Length: 582
Image (cartoon, rainbow, N blue to C red; front, side):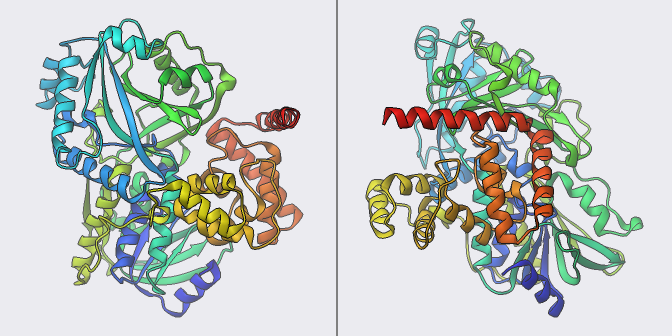
């Protein structure tokens, strides 16, 4: 169903059971939950799906080891259960991540941890081996019945430096445990969307649209692409806008009825670094470490590069967040502390991003003490409008259970029964995931006529959905693109089937070209030409889109046009070298 069909349908039948506001991972989760229960539901997203905080996470799928010292045991237990479900339900995007914690003291943190647990202190402090051992023992205990991954182990100083010689030599020991990581969180969000839309004709989703109050208790959806507007009459609204909840509520309620602030988000910034010495130094592990000020930082291999982060800074306006110079310097300083021999040049930072953690409102001066748990609260309207369910808090790992919680509260209000559970439901390319990948790839290659190498690339990118994409790619003449890993037909399918409206939808979210530093100016222009052809844009509209994307890439991600142009030359040189060696 395209945009025009969605708006025509709402014009003809404005009454809907539920309107979900916000197409981030939690909004998509509750949308999917409701759709699968047969609810007539429409999702409205102001920008693109998973373009806010859901595109700016640390790419970790974890239980939240450090939340134990805040006493959030139920959150850690829930997170570990959901982590393990994602390992089963989305194995194409979520995989095990061995995690090593450098330990600089033996007994420090015991007293401070106790008083923090009791709420008597807000200060971050170092965690010694005893505290870390206790936390990891709880981690193992909570996952003992599933045992999907190995238990934790400690190493002495000599053994640790033998495995990771670049670590700060001041360490006393290290601990290794297992969590998980997600390679393409934005694509997993698209798969949740597709799963929901497959549920029936009463399920609709539109990006680049706004839900606005037209009169007390009355609403309209405005298409910011075409300018079209249609009235809508929801029985209930779900505000799943995360860090934007209070801003969204201002547009959902007339001024006298607006609720008190519910959110108090903090900003987390990350860098993507292309440095071979750094990659080798990690030896396939995430290093989960404390900076000198006691704040937790991470670095781990990510799609051929290294992800480093993060910061934790209060923000008032989530719309304007970006990685500032002082944040980049802080992250690099923390990296220099834990791996002092490795030097990072500015040009090796190929991408940066920043997002807002959707935390409950709090006056706590130390952001690390703000609860990370999630809950739902209904806000009743006094003007005859529908009640609004606000989804407060939430971390990426628990998106399914949070969506389930919100959906069950909505179903109760609607006097509807749940008929499907998503706890063991595979997501997108995780369906029918093969035990023998090589045999699966060989079969699809033979059926499509594509090379095994090409099918393997598609499988890594889309899981078992690669079969559908391979068939489409092979069904008509294809042409190469400036990036050898992609072709015109693949990009065309993404444009046609995944609600793509802008160039950044493709280059920042439907693919990993930008975040991995593999995007060149030639590739950006080639993809833009395909998008313009599909959308039938004029030359002027195409130029406007190009300028929009380059501005966004510079302002939000620290990548300028000169850098993209330089990558043209690098790719040309690589192709020439490959041709000569062949």
